[in-house]
Image (cartoon, rainbow, N blue to C red; front, side):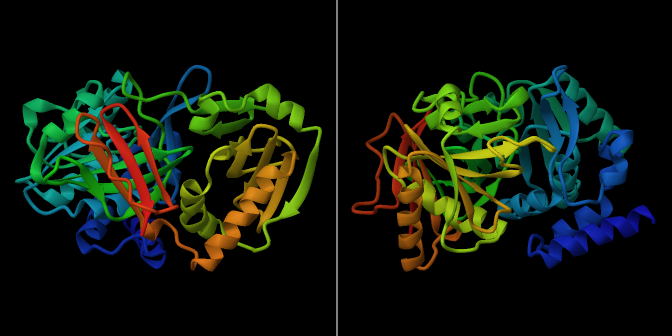
Length: 394
């Protein structure tokens, strides 16, 4: 099968899924060869709608991927690119995302990509040269500082999960610019299109569930990872884990007391990720908190496989697999399961609100107090490094 045909197949798949709408983005996916940006042994995967690992640490930990094309398309559409724009990308990866954006902004536009890892930066620049797109500038630096020599930027995009939007990005943004970035909420990420407001806050009206490797360096934020099972087969992500509300020994001891259950409704993985999880993040209150989990291929932990989410508290945990059709696994006391059941009842009563209703605002910590919506039970405020993150549903 020819490369052009496989690119067309990918585009058709993304359009059928509702992940690609803009004809300029479509043309970029057709014209820029993804295979040129992948390792030789991965080029057969070039036009699958899936991320591709491009670098691992010596211990096997993934440190860089070529992002999933469907997620790329959604985030690039969030940017609302036009010809001639000046773009800053945080996280070069393979260079493919920068190449897609450069195709859209054209010869009069500029794309600068900042990469923390020197090997990845060098590889991305080589890939761009090979694809005859060497005019894209790849910089080896800590992306939290942006790149002032080529500011100000019309758009800034992060292709890594961020704990906060650094003040340097805001300073290097044009007054009507946008920052598109996957922001962490507990163990989950949402790609927001943040626009600077007159009061200095950053506001995103529409945010998309996503999953990226975490930003590295001093601005990465606190540890949110816990490993469980043989060889650390389960990865559990949550600020509650980092805060010591629960630890591996506690979970392991609860594993001897487990019971299977059912949420009461059958939901698809898409419904869980885009509707139920965003709601639960805001609806569940102390002593309960949310976490995401993923288990290595071919492994089991507590009898679970794959990916999903968990509701946790001291002495109780309720795991929900994405592909489980609504099944649950409770460890320890039933409190977490009961809290989940109560929240689902309210969620259904309210019409199943989800990511479409999620709003995000980042207010500078040096400014006045965050404006948490009054009397809104679906609202949280989380102080970060440079901003307080406010999340709520309308």
